[in-house]
Length: 185
Ligand code: K1U
Ligand code: ZN
Image (cartoon, rainbow, N blue to C red; front, side):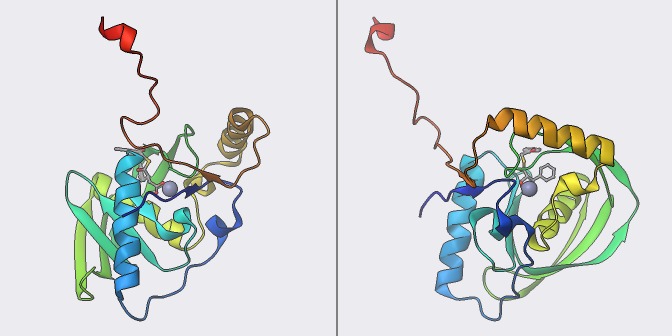
């Protein structure tokens, strides 16, 4: 398995429509495994294919230790409304309150190629809506008011300090800390 780079706000792929998956192949399963590894390393609860530079209609989600693979997901029922803060692995350190359905039913294909139906509330419902948005080129900032979106984009530009790269690397836990033997003495 491999850790994948995550595409960040400004990368055109994040604004593209994904392509329906016709067949669940070993190559697609390998992508799914890499997406889970990347999502866990990035401390996310979801990840969609465009975020790792891919155009397949695939997302992975894990809220509360229940890993889900959603291929060609569709929301077939949505009920209620809830406003909660969201973040996005493609817009790190930017947060905003987003109105979403409180309850959704999602139909998809699972990793084994079989149909699945997921009935979810609260954070899982929110996360699946966030990920399905990614599959249609939408980001959580699109749901913010104009004033809040402008403020979020201004903060993003400030944090970027002129960095124009379209991807960021995920550093696995325990790597990158400078270990100083003197500290042990
Ligand atoms: O798609 C992504 O960018 C992943 C994103 C999903 C998401 C977060 C919050 C609400 C809805 C969807 C993240 O996982 S960002 C990390 C994060 O904000 C978070 C992590 C653990 C629990 C709650 C939020
Ligand atoms: Zn996101």
